[in-house]
Image (cartoon, rainbow, N blue to C red; front, side, top):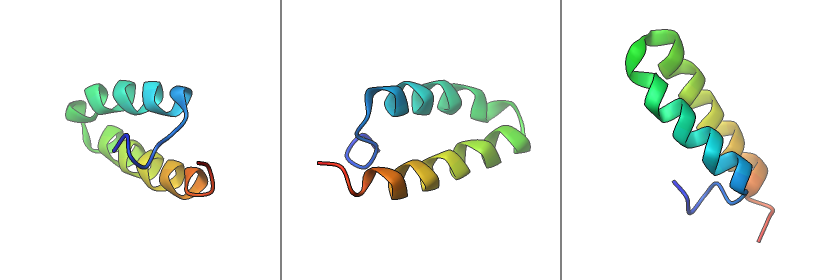
Length: 46
């Protein structure tokens, strides 16, 4: 996923949400939404 999320703050948030995603369905949903949105936003960055 680090290939698609390129900012340091995005990678930090990804790691934080990945750890919490095993706690419940809402945490998993937030994790997947974050991955989708972060990937779309960072596609334009080099």
